[in-house]
Length: 376
Image (cartoon, rainbow, N blue to C red; front, side, top):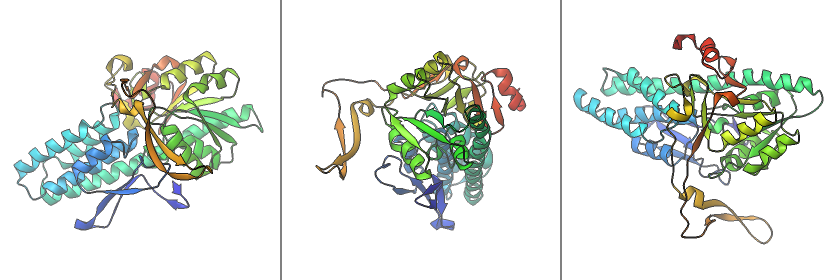
């Protein structure tokens, strides 16, 4: 996607040979600053995932894949046996950074196969090629999600000719959450680019405010009309006919269609069901966990630091309303403890459809397998 007219992916390399550098967009700095960070080691990659310099299912997976390349480059001088041990340790360090998103483990498994039996320069080259393939595939799959999702938006637009299609989303599942295009926002961008009048209701998405800081920022960069709302407004808008559809992303989806996403997604799905508003989940196949059937019982839910709930950050304003730096502020009594579950699970019964790179299907085992028959 473009930032002030220049195309960026969320993760890429520059240079070649020993001078090749892995680069990311530091999402913790947005929307106040567009900052690029270089990652030089697998430890730095682990930190970037754990501390959410990068976030979003697809981008976490791609970053982990590039982390394996850096780990192989660091260990290239070791013997075959030592290399194998070091790589196993590095992959485990990457695996435990974020427990909920299935893309992370999926990417590591692909890298394991790519470098199996290799060490030294051969392993480095294989890991690099596989990381690039994973990144390119992620971007291509998200582009296809946009095409399939656009058809859904077009159908809604056809039922209200000349009127705007109002779409509500939760958290950030745009290009910042993937390598490019995004999942939930990819259909929005595709529809907007096709001339369909769309408007996005952007949930602020506490506690980290990814909607306010990331979704609103990238929609603005693309020129898509949008309005920021508090997390609790969505149900009210649906009751008054101001939402035509909901699209969210996902961090893990079961074979039967249960979807884990940012905390609060389940409440939006309940409100949508009560008001007969279509609720879609957009995801590439790498986000499916075909080994699971019951999302509520089986998907691991990450609990993060309580400080993410107790503390917020933002721009400081001077007396004229102009930005005067950034700061973090505590929003509760100093002695008040907090809990911070990062995700919840929306049961398949509340999901109208899953938008994937292979098409749109119902949130059911039979329908998912119709798109992915090789998983039978």
